Image (cartoon, rainbow, N blue to C red):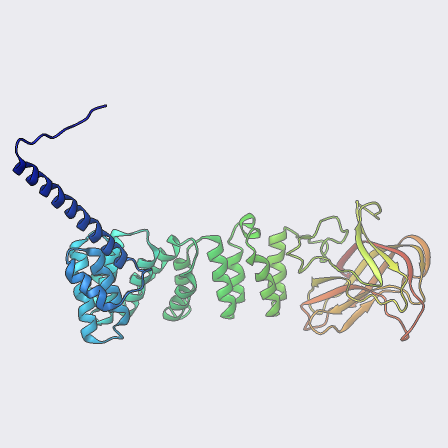
Amino acid sequence: MLVFALRFSTRLKQIIALVGLCVACLSLALITISHFVVRTLADADVVTTRATLATAAAYFPHSAQLQARLAAVELAESMGEEDALKQAEAAALSAVRLSPWRSDNHFLLASVRNLQSDLDASEISMRTAVKLAPNYPQVHWLLANLLIRQDKVEEAFKEFQAAIALDPSSRFLPGAMDTVWTISEGNLDKLIAVVGNRPKDVLALAQYLLRQSRPTEATGLVKRIARQELVELPAAAEFVDALLSQKQVVLARDLWGYLTENENPSNALSNGSFEREASQKLTQFDWKISQSKFANLAIDSTLAHTGNNSLRIIFTGKDTTVLDREISQTVVVNPNVHYLLEYFAKTERLITTEGIRVVVADFASSTLLGTSTPITAGSTDWQSGTVDFVAPANTQAIVVTIKRTPKFSYDEPTKGKVWFDDFSLREKTR
């Protein structure tokens, strides 16, 4: 262990040394206090008054942080007043002079000059901020809006594109789409270029186009996204629903087929043999199965006409049994075309006073288009059934359901089991 000892030959030298040490300690304390004051007042989260900041900035004129905070407060409280803006400009200029490498100081100066309507000077400061912080999306966004005010449209579009590409949260996307759409008068190519090719942004653009009543272009954009990437986006299923809400049934079915890889030219009806497990989100054109107090519906993997699965209905034996839309599927059809719907059914100890039927109705109006002969009571092996109908001239789609409708307000309860399998829908040839 080393020990240093200072020995002074005279009392005067001891006093001088002590005074020097005190001065050094005092200087260090003043520096520490100064740093504390500057850092505290420069912190944007600390609430203070403009007068306090002005006093501190005057006392510490070489603090870029204090000058920048003063400029920000002057700017926020200026209310467009010329004198306040001049004070904000002076403080911002001091901040830039003291810390010229900080992009936020140049951005602050640009904001002041923007409010002073000095757009050229504001652009110079903003471009400096962009050079110093090229990966900061907000400066690109603000520069883009400044360039729009100067009618430098093409340059603005490039800055919008940069802001969107650099921001993983896509927070600037809605505003950019609105601006580009308005200025370009609905030029889709401009909008696509600005949005870029990030899947979630492309889908957001498609949703935007749908709100602008451009469903065909919107759907085409969605289908540019790779299927594996698209199905992972929650908004994909919402987009199909949005198409349906606008009665764009054909486009919705086309996109649904792309998403689910469910295309079968020989059968317009989807998953007719119940072999494929339906997606929980993409149910729009698959079988929709819900429960009822009158019957339990489920996919049966122990019994099938062909393949491995069938639809099983077990009636619970409650009075006045009703089966309406517990099982249904929406199917796109061509207008004025004659169709034949075929299926197979099997029963086990079925007791019913009114048979179960397969029914076809118009998707939009719910108008009845065709119905099968009723499935009678008893136990039977697999038997075929059909529904023969013509799609009306104004029809885009039909709904296939299995129904049991009582004839009277009260009838005897239905009991037993029914299985359905191998539904197919084809154009009927003469």
